[in-house]
Image 1 (tube, rainbow, N blue to C red):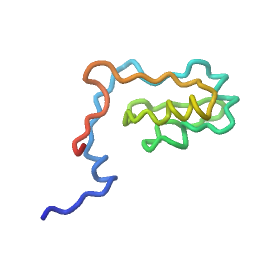
Image 2: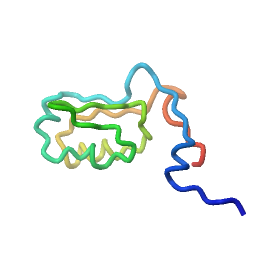
Image 3: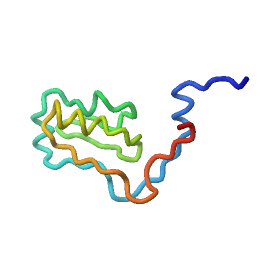
Image 4: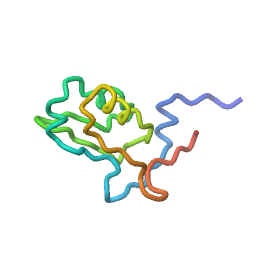
Amino acid sequence: MAARLSVSERLGADSFTTDKVPHLKIADPRLCRTCVLKPCIKVCPAEVYHWDADHLRINYENCLELGACRVACHELGNRALQWDFPVGSRGVHFRYG
C-alpha cells in the first residue's frame, strides 16, 4: 500500500502555467482600503492576497482557482474583486485531483 500524501505534499506537486495578464483584478482600490473584514485574505488557502501598506497585493500566479475569494469579497467585503478563470490552458494543473 502506498503512503498517503499530506495536503501540503499534494499541493506541492501541482504546477502552474501563468499568463502575463492577471485573472484576478481589483475594480477600485478604494473599495479594498475601506473594506473592514478583508475576507479575501482570510479565505484564500494559497495566500494569494496580502495587505501591503495601503493596498492589496495579489500574487495571481499562485491561485488555486477555488473562487472562495470572489464569494467572500462579494458576500462579506466591498465587492471589489474581479475574478475570472485564466485564459485557455493557463492556471493551476492539479496532479492529485
